[in-house]
Amino acid sequence: MMAEPRASSIDGKLAEEFAVPSHVEEVKERMTAFVQRHGAAGGRVVLITSGGTKVPLESRTVRFLDNFSSGRRGAVSAEHFIDSGYAVVFLHRHRSLCPYTRMFSTVNLLDALQFRDGGGGAASEGSAAEEEVVVVSQQALPNVAKVLRRYQEVKEAGLVLPIEFSTLSEYLHLLKAAAQALSTIGSKAMFYLAAAVSDFYIPASDMPEHKIQSSNGPLQISMKMVPKILSPLVKDWAPQAFVTSFKLETDPAILLDKARRALDTYRHQAVVANVLDTRRGYVVVVTPDAKHELVLTEQEVEEDVEIEERIVSNLTSAHTHFISQ
Ligand code: PMT
Image 1 (spheres, protein in one colour):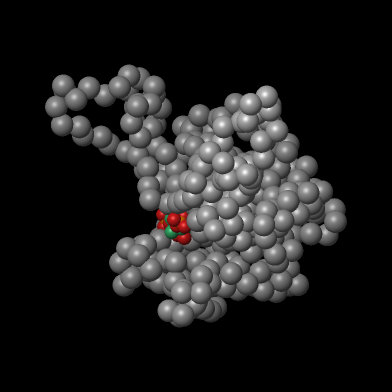
Image 2: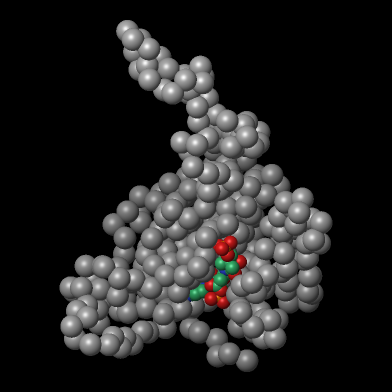
């Protein structure tokens, strides 16, 4: 079994080695107000992390280390959590996919819009340009009316609090602030850590200030291990919450073993295990005493069923049971 990291030492490392973003206190206040409003109404709140992290190689950053994550898992899951009665703090990578708008992320907006009179867009002589009416092509944006209606309902009810991060430092500090905000509602809080977080970074003290020069020849960099944030999260920051982490591998043969080891090490409630190539159609939800395989059939994939609906249904049931205990 992995040696269990000491939570308090990780907390100290976070403060010393990762620059604190200037807006963290202001964001923490917004998160606390959001959680308390929903908590006072007896509601549950889930913190979803989503997207990849950016790890700079230079202080005045020209280059950085990134990863594949699109943020789709987090964005789709957020919609299903809302449909299940949760309020959502959506801690996502800048420009990664967001709930509802993600459905149109690949659409060229200008191809989806047209002038109502069907004309080429030139304002008729004497008419002000602002009088022109632009309409949406339903063909280019299927279901747009339905999605817009739901988006507006959710926004009006204040059910999502979107918070952005770009760098690894921002992710770590904002996650800590979010955890402290969610801890105020005890077991009604859930963490759904779907972001693909870098395991490696270069400390500010080791980083060159200026652009690394290719004239110096091939680049060799040495990176340090990012502290596993699950440890202080589970032990110190939100000890009563229901915590779900994710485990991503490219080799299916080691996936379940790694998921179980994570549960043994951090002692949280669930791990969603997935393999890079099959992550849209197959995941395993591993808990300390069970393993649930969630699979989409070919027909379901063709019908655009999304596996996140099953993941969220599985975890919200487990959360209900957890709260009742
Ligand atoms: O965004 P998509 O393109 O839709 O893809 C979704 C996904 C594949 C990114 C998602 O399903 C997923 O698996 N996310 C987690 C990927 C990952 O970072 O796995 P990991 O094995 O490196 O980390 C395991 C867990 O430890 C993660 O929940 C992470 O939040 C946590 N962690 C990671 C690093 C770190 N320093 N501290 C942590 O606590």
